[in-house]
Amino acid sequence: MESALVYGAPPLSTGVEHPSYPHARAPRPVTKGSVHLDALRGGAALLVFMNHTRALYFSSIIDQPTPGATVSIGIDPVAHPATATAKIPFVQADPLAGHGIKLASEAVVIFFVLSGYLVGGSTLRAMRLRNWSWKNYLIKRMTRLWVPLIPCLLLCVFLDRTGYRFFGEASIYHNPPGIGLVTATDLVHRLGVTTVLGNIFFLQNIRVWYLGTDVSLWSLANEFWYYMIFPCLALAFTAGRSILLRVLYLVLAAAMLVFITPSVAILFPVWVLGAVVAILPKPLSSPRAGLLSLVGLPVLFFCMIKARLLFLPMVVVESLIGLLASAFLYLLVQQREMTGRSLYRSLAGYFSQISYTLYIVHVPLAIFLASSINSPWHRWSKTPAHLALFLILDGMVLACATLLWRLFEANTDSIRLRLFERRPAIAGNPVALP
Image 1 (tube, rainbow, N blue to C red):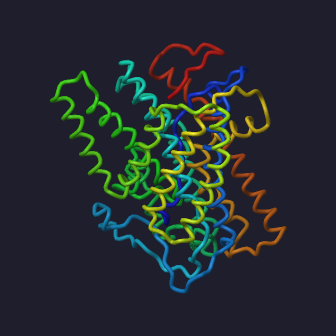
Image 2 (image 1 turned 180 degrees about the vertical axis):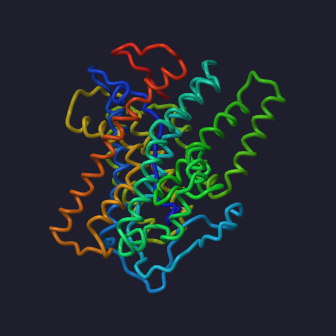
Image 3 (image 1 turned 30 degrees about the horizontal axis):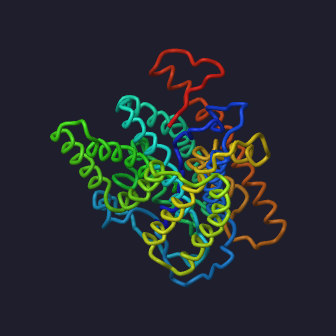
């Protein structure tokens, strides 16, 4: 899935079931495993963020431009015949495209594994305890996705339209830098009401384009449909229901897998790996799991880079990273020792908190800033001054994402309570989210 659809996240759009998550702060210590999960999630978000913003200014450290190379800039009309009538080209010649270290898709795979562990695991636990319901599940999942997403989509439309109109033909809006941006003409068509609605209902790269320049939105369609398919499969194989109902759930899951097309469905097994981790026995002692995870992290990162340098097919790379990330996650969740406040915990919690908002808004923000100072668009040399300016610009994007998180995502629980439960949240006793 590298290409115009690179990157991910994310996102994780799910809450983390431990006290260090923003909606469940607590003064008491939490487990090391919980803090490490925050760090893994936040680190994956930063990897995507830095990968995309770096590409706006600098070539990869191993980039070797290949004349006539092409980069994917949209939906494959073969894989997505419903969009073929849009007459938007799938590839575009780019003399700057070459081989480089681009780990955004791999970071998204980590997000999927984490999401499977958190959402899939909590779903299986609730079904086992017989207190799971579609109503509660859909309310939690949809508010978790929509509360940050809708404002960010509107901001993307504003930034893209403003940047396209005011920064001129020498800007990055008219000169794609090789990270998968569409051409100027296509950008205009990707900012309409139909595209906005399609992205709100998670049909990007299934029936509509992702919105404007926000290439990161591709994985939200994966995430949403995995949320829908997994409970159907779990209910189909859960005892205590009639054969007819179980068959109906199985047929519904199969129909959704067909609807989302193979290019979206292909990573569903990776997502399920996270749910498998949640139900596996956890026999390791906390010290042994911690020691093994110290080995597992560099192995995971090394394989992420090495797989790219071997130029393996992306489906092979993503499957390999999914397996390794699941094994690493399995080690993290067995670290049950309690830990107190620390700088590591604070940073891990912060980047985990803002990871979803950062994921869905960073590309339009970064492109708008790049167009304001890097026009006519060109690659920068890797000088200390340019690197310092790059970090300042990234800091500005990070600050904007934090503000948006504070305004919207941080209020998800209270918004849900007002809309659906109609009872005030008790101060100091926030609602835990799966």
